[in-house]
Length: 182
Image (tube, rainbow, N blue to C red; front, side):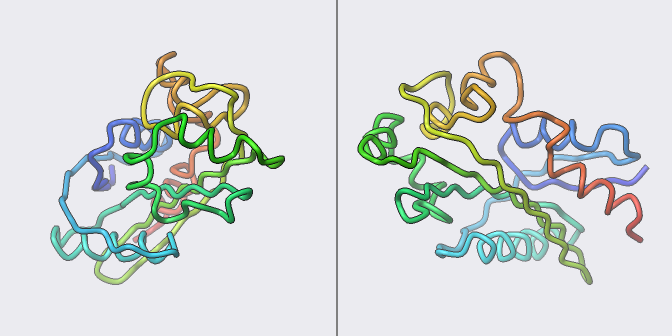
């Protein structure tokens, strides 16, 4: 069995990693590493830098996960700044920003980066939804108002589910690749 270190303090992301790698001969181990993330308009640059930084600390192959969000009606705000924005904004703040906009779409992009001494391998996937009319569920502010397939991420969490359907996990792509790697 192959082992993958997954650097995250986010239990939801760890559970999604376990679910996505189920059925592959891969063991996921969660490690918590404190780093200073760079600030950038480019979420990919943030993810790649984060993976390299974590690898330099651990000196072991590692996977990181980053999620960026874009709201087309707001010129794709907040992009790579979502981590801070989600702490600053309430669910109502997001709803107020888009209340007079025709385009109520929201997208989150999930990025996984595998990093070892020789290889940097990135996987990305977009998930499109719409804003709900009112906050629903628990979790981060954006998770209470971003609706995918009929319910917010916060509602899914309250129902004991993960953020989206396991068959859509980007971790499946990583697991397929990693199964054949080395």
